[in-house]
Each structure stands twice: as structure tokens, then as C-alpha cells.
Length: 120
Image 1 (cartoon, rainbow, N blue to C red):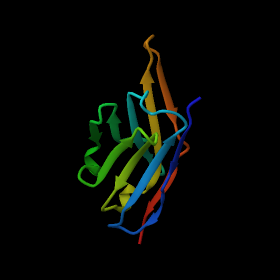
Image 2: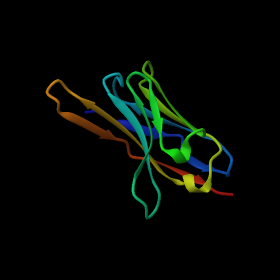
Image 3: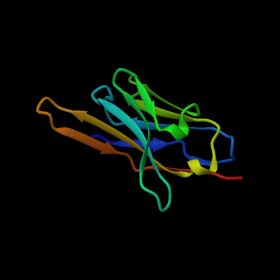
Image 4: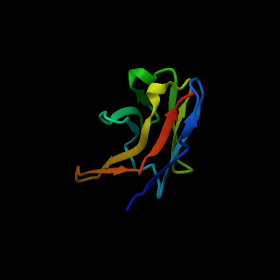
């Protein structure tokens, strides 16, 4: 069973930076894509950024130019570097990983979430 454990959340002032980490219990190379989602109070969970096995990444428009997703296969860890943080970035951030096996069955894993609060 795969486990994903997020860390790095906290309280930061507007304009500050945080780096979130998502450590997997096994090799992340198996995953076709790894994502960061977030959910603010009273809002739907949204996809923030994703990184494919080949290293290509995509971002939601609201974080482009401020957030960077990366993966370190040797450390089985995915990161989300968040710069120029805004109050509207406040949310619980979740790590997600997906892969499809040879029978086309999709496996979907989630971490427990880490709180990010941007406030002065």
C-alpha cells in the first residue's frame, strides 16, 4: 500500500515563500503523474499543479509564475515551491499520485494534507 506524507505547511506573511514536500513510501517512478491539490474552506478541491513521469509540468493559471512543482525520484519525493504567496493561497494542500497498470486499472493515492495559511 502506497503512503503519501505531506510536510512543509505553515503560517506565512503575504509575499513570503513555502516549500511543500510529499514523501512516498516507495518508488515514485511508477506514478504516471503526481499532483498537488488544494481546498480552501467552503470551496471545492482544485488542482494546483501536476508533474508527469517525463518531468513536464502544468499549473492552474492563478499560480503560474509563482509556484514550481518538481520531483526527485531518488528521494521518492515531490515538491511544491510556493513564492509570492497571497492570502487567497490559504488552503489545505494535498498530494496525489496516479498510475495505470498493464490491465488499464487506475490507482489513485492521496496524502492527509498540510495547512498553508497566508496572513499578516
